[in-house]
Image 1 (cartoon, rainbow, N blue to C red):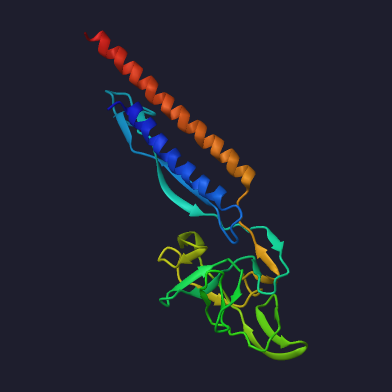
Image 2 (cartoon, rainbow, N blue to C red; image 1 turned 180 degrees about the horizontal axis):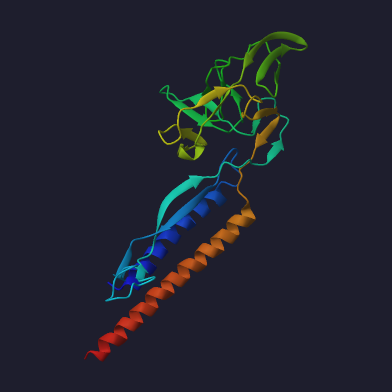
Length: 259
């Protein structure tokens, strides 16, 4: 197969993956706590009819001939920039401003992590995510409480009218490499060897973000930028397709000359 055909085909395949990622970003523009993804590319192996520095009988080639064979997707990584924080005035909506994740447990007891702070009071009084994942460490709302206050440092105070009923602590975790977390869907992430083990801390201390009650962190997707990225990816796909057509026409002409 012609190198140009292979290179163009790899470019089309890579841009298709790029378009898939961009489309997913756009689809989640209104998903609370969603973090956009980006595609990372790298060039593929090179054919070297004349190697760099080769001896050609007294002369040394300063550059040689190196012909690349296309591109490939090597990673899709999450971008953990801060999403816009919008006010909801819901007492169980909590936005993380800065670094950190909420730690939750799934139904099998597995540790998972999320930035979606749309908390709910479960049937047993436990605070959960909007999908029913229980916070860890667990926080149980006093059944007599009709007012819940959550401070920037994570202190959860339960009150009946103006009478205090008790407190609990809402913790955050952070990772050395959050891009190494495995995205599971549902705004959930799983720890991996690439992410490292989580550090647990108090909101607002050291490098942990602070909490804002009555707010929700929106997706960090910039719809205008994603539309621009989509146009660029689409044009790259079209140009690679045109390269295949041109290479095919050239091969046909060469074939006709041989007859």
